[in-house]
Length: 325
Image 1 (cartoon, rainbow, N blue to C red):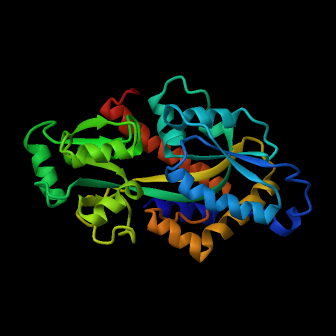
Image 2 (spheres, one colour):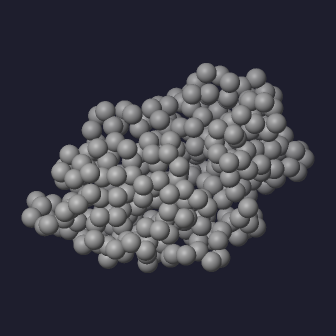
Image 3 (spheres, rainbow, N blue to C red):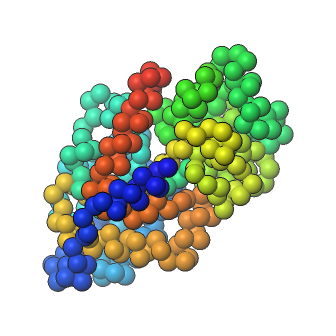
């Protein structure tokens, strides 16, 4: 669903300026900083690190990742919005700061639709619903039946209030009529440990953070929020194939810059990023980490997609009355 939306929108967007013609420009003339609004080691780092290596080779300048974590990614995203649009400060951001935060935080310091120039869609991290491997829930239907039998009888952990894992669990409840009890944690590792120790019944969080535990059998994956099954956890069915067609939710990541970036610089970056992501070693590494491709839409298509996602998750936030912690 998300991939099809991006690909169809990309087909309607204008062709990028000639990458070869843009090579004559003076950019970059110093190191390029990529602000990552999360701590090192997360999905954004897994995606951006191999890309920075490819960009350094392509442009002959250092591309340095600047991790600025805080407030669900909004601190670093806001910092990037204030920088000059000269191509020497870029941003790797995702669903939370760009599509969820506008509804979650009433006084957000930036407007995603106006503050950024969109460069490239990088990849996506689907969500998995997982429970303890030796627990009572064998299938999503077992899990749902227990959740519907008694309101908030089934608890689930996530990486925090307003995370995509949290809201995917909320969406599942809205779509099925179940009332799950959300228990926020400070990260995927804590949520997983709470399930393994029996303190929570399950979790909704990114596949990559939980794939190893699922493959080892300590966690049982009940359903994926991706459109198709994933190489990282091939035995876990999608929620769509189990009869929940609305349960497609991807934590997408994109490359952006402060609004006003020269379109030719954006075109050069987009071409280099797609070449990097298309390399067999990079594809294998990302797939093994629970990351999926979302195609190569142009800037106009990315902008429309971000707006659609903001509308979608805004409805979930408002309907469920989600409030920031």
